[in-house]
Every structure is written in structure tokens, then in C-alpha cells.
Image (cartoon, rainbow over all chains, first blue to last red; front, top):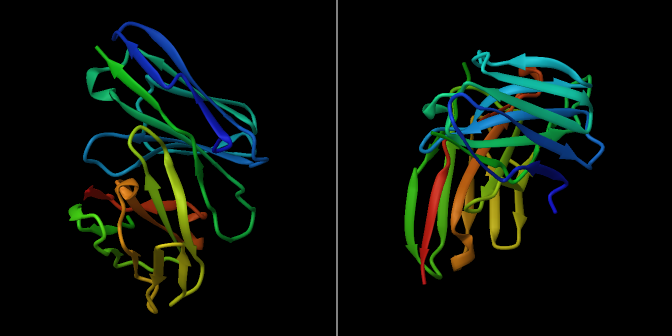
Length: 116
Length: 112
């Protein structure tokens, strides 16, 4: 048990579907992240939430919509995706202080998304 | 932006051999982290390095950060089949709001 739980682990959806990925952390962290991992590419940071406020949006298309209702839960709502959006979506959390200091991420197992 | 160059991209070794991989950057990172990702799972933290020149071991794994804070290496001694996976380095600078920059990963394959 990593302390960060992602559901579903696998998702197949059509381009017109609407689905959501869910992430829950049990570590008492205050920051949560969405990363995209495609084959043969470095991890791509998508969104960051710090104390429930979105602090980073790395030019992610609007067909990806994050939601962070509290510090323990993070969602990624998916709508009219493209086949090239097929990837492993990783959620992570950390204790991110307001001052400088090490920011060690704990990752979930990921949600493998296939867009047909 | 900041980039981490991780090498080699992949390695195919015989069980029992030692492994070495490294990350380099033109930027300074205050903290270096090494993660391992097993097939079908998320990355798991192996070792964290918080000081320049720090050397830290975790079982058969040893990692060190460079004196200049621009590089780090990870060594695995006496590899075993369960060492298979992708190893990522990550660097953090205080100037970047504590955000991590990840290397491209080293895919390790071990032949029994």
C-alpha cells in the first residue's frame, strides 16, 4: 500500500465519452499532482494543487479538467479525448511547505487509459 | 527550462552484474531523488540526497550527488531479476517552487 490510491487502474473509453479518474491519499499531504506518462517520454507534469488551490497548469488541453475538493482527493475529468491521450496517468502527493525544502512525491499505481 | 539528461536509456545485463546509471544537468539541483517504477506500477522512492556530494546507500543501492549539484549517479550491486524496471532521477530546486524535474528514465532488464 503506497498511501496513494488511484481508480480505476484501467480505463478504455471512446472519444465521445466522459469519464473521471480518482486519486485519494492517506498520508496527510497538502499537495497533489497529476502526471502523464507516455511510452518513451519523460513524465509530464499536468496539474498541481497546493492546499486545494491549483498552482500549476502546464498548458494542458481543456479536455482534461482537474478537481480537488479537499487535500485528500483529486479527480481528473476526461471529455472528448483523442487517441494520443492514451497513457498512464499518475497521481502523486507530497508535503509541500510554504518555505523552501525537500518536496518528495509519493506516487499512486496509475490509471492506464486507452482512448479508442 | 530545466532538463535532466539520464543515461543510459536502457540496459540489458546478466544477473549478478553491477549496474551504474547517472543524471546530468546544466542547472543546479538542491535535492536529488532516485525512483524505481516496476512494470504496471507507479514510481517508488529509492533514495533521496539532500546535500552536495552526499553518498547514501539502501541495501544494494548506492547513490551520490555531485559536488557541483549538477549530477547524480545510482549504482546497483549484484543485480537480481526483481531489479527489472525503470529508474528515474529527479531534481528539485528551491527556486522552482520545490517542483521536481524528472529525467527520461533508465530501463533495466536483467537476464537470469
